[in-house]
Image (tube, rainbow, N blue to C red; front, side):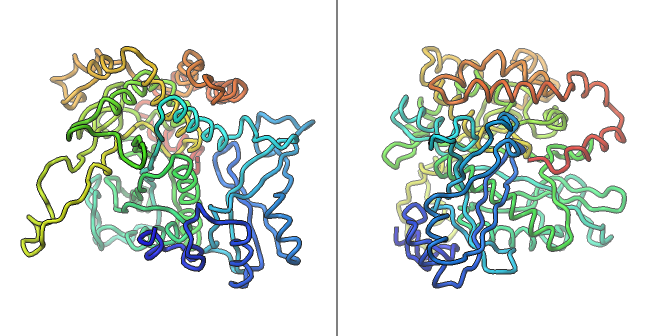
Length: 500
């Protein structure tokens, strides 16, 4: 714990010398009093996946105690489409461990994420955050283990083209300044996210960069460290909010849209997962991918078509899921293979001490690298409802532990080649395909909904609502209809430019 506290970027952690999970109401009050905070924000995601905000000014100590203890009342029908106006009141109650200082507020402000409760004081059954809570509990109850996740947040920064030091088109991966124009902006985003409690792994420029109509589009990525899935969702939500606000302060535009234009890299939101027991990573066994990991992968192979209903939620999502764009199209998995749906990344499995080889003066030390092994789902994108996506992945991985043929299915869906190469066309055609539209995704969810409704994780009303929303796009032939029509594609992108 001392190591966690000693270099934390979060000023509240530094002040209280406590991990966020240990924050109490009195801790929040003490921090507010000592730091001269005059405003409190309650924040929570609505049906569109974006954070909403309720502002408070601190009138007196009694009122501060009241809102921290009781929360406040909000209109649920204005937040979620599944709530009727005739019975719409909900409670929002802050989770103290999510507290962070708002870096954009002109007046000293403390923000917290909230949970939703109904009129009877029960967690709102169909709220995204409670659905993820139920999914993680069901995973633990079934397996005796815990589900952790981390996201890779890809986004484009858009600004006027300066016309000098141009980056190589579609060759922006890990580019340095001055060819990458927004490294400093990304670093500032990372610092603000870390100060808000985000556990960041690293950031870098990504493949995508191009100019269009006098604007430069540069793709960037911020990747997180694995944490309990509920915390992973919170961190991604806050990170997107921070990136957009900081971009706005610099008169930049930012988009997490899955696809910008044809022939250029789209933005995914890959999710890495690991399964933990007693604080130990269970993804490896004797230096190779474990049967536990294979069972989880088999569950994802089974439910992959319907997982798109949570991770790919608007028509532009399916313009990204096409061959030759480092995005998956078929249901398969493999090691270190970016053409597959689920990738097993390089995992430090060799017995060699790499730091000693690179630094001959360094004495050899033992470091448990098994904690670093994850598996990566590559289909989701920035349109995802983060809570529901991680809940769906937890359901899928849990399903793998109930499948009698899980290890056999894992073997049958493993590939070790680039399936998009012409010489492997027969192999690719023999694999199940991901949906090619929101409408097709809705069909897949309808056929597999029972898996998500098991143990009451996803409510039937929520599944009905997701299916209806996807069907309403009426995009079953859209990818075919817009083939080669760049102008029509750009109009579509504009419609969903600020999704998620």
